[in-house]
Length: 420
Ligand code: IMP
Image (cartoon, rainbow, N blue to C red):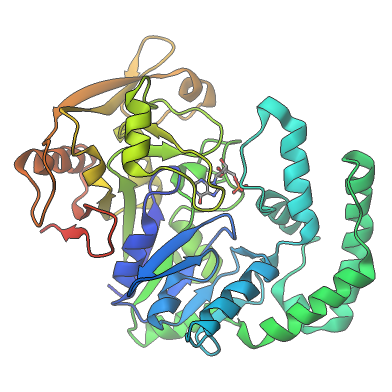
């Protein structure tokens, strides 16, 4: 299909990278539509490992790759990714495109992200501390600095002077942190400007032309549905729009241009950071699943919280994203279990039960999971799904009324089964 969005259907870390890699092979343009260096993505190609946070992974396969206006970029991180790719023999100029409207993550955003989390103490969100929230906040307040500001030294200086003056007050007086010195910041950003200038592009036009020419465009979301600023488990969310509609907003195309939405979900659930998590596993099985799934964050190294598959949350993801098919990743992680609980409903504080995601935060915070147990297949998954694994997949697909078309069965890039 010409325009496909890949969206995380849970709280991020669903294994989108692998599905994106797979679909990128058949795409003509790969587009990242939100988030910034809070995402992490490890790709292994021909024995070489690439850790990419901002550039769509399609670049490793030599695919044109675009970063949309709905993203934020940390210029230092972006430059280090470009340098690394080039050092390893990958062309980037003429292949990497960054929207001029994309906002920059500035060094004070990183400092403020950490300082706010420290101040919140036990009420903290558990951010990646990469400056994401403060960068999007400045965008919304209309005092952010955009990629295109780098192209005009006069405007750049003016904006940096204003920003430094304001942020220094916060840093020094509110948080007792070191301030920034404007000339140093200007000099660094003029250097960034000369390195990044050739990559700045009109990414809306780029995508529009590609679609008009019948090319296949893949939109890659970061994080996941339940971390969406508007529709996720606020305030324990990220500051952008991971849901599929975010792709149209970020790239400035009409929502009717999107043909397919592939939701990526693990065969269980993980969550990093704070916030309610109804199907979180209790007891020793928690650590067993974490070890089997190697559930430690790519960006922060933090341990991920693990839960049983939550069909209530997935049904919500299907709805808010318009998911047309599902990729179920890491099914092999469940291979040893004799019985596999699946959360099919929530019991609400008033005693009622629901299979729809609660619209009110208090209901979600206080609901309890209702599990159904499915028999495990207790064998390795090879080239075909064991019968009971097939039943597990069919249970998910029937409950959500969406086909599961891809199943992840191991760590390697090739360990994906296509189901018909
Ligand atoms: P932020 O995006 O750094 O502001 O973090 C906000 C919330 O989103 C925190 O709970 C993070 O743990 C979570 N988060 C951000 N990026 C990712 C990701 O790539 N995977 C999983 N969780 C993430």
